[in-house]
Length: 65
Image 1 (tube, helix red, strand yellow):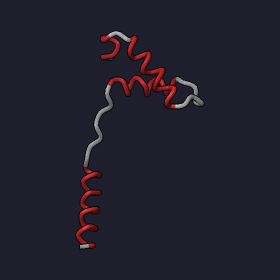
Image 2 (tube, one colour):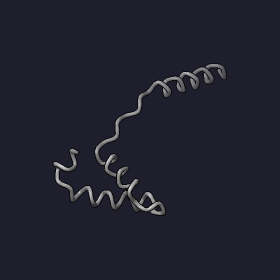
Image 3 (tube, helix red, strand yellow):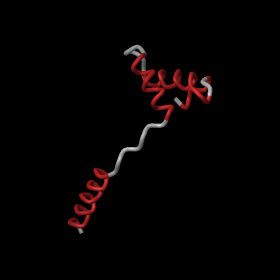
């Protein structure tokens, strides 16, 4: 039985390697752009909150860019 578990985990690792990474949605791209422009000492939680507030104020046209 121990051998079956080892095989199962090794097969699971192979599947996870083959899985493609999903594309980032527009908000994550927006937030990442803000991260590049923000101060380096700013915490990610603070940056995400600021990005969320700014995102809500953007028009649909700007969100699509």
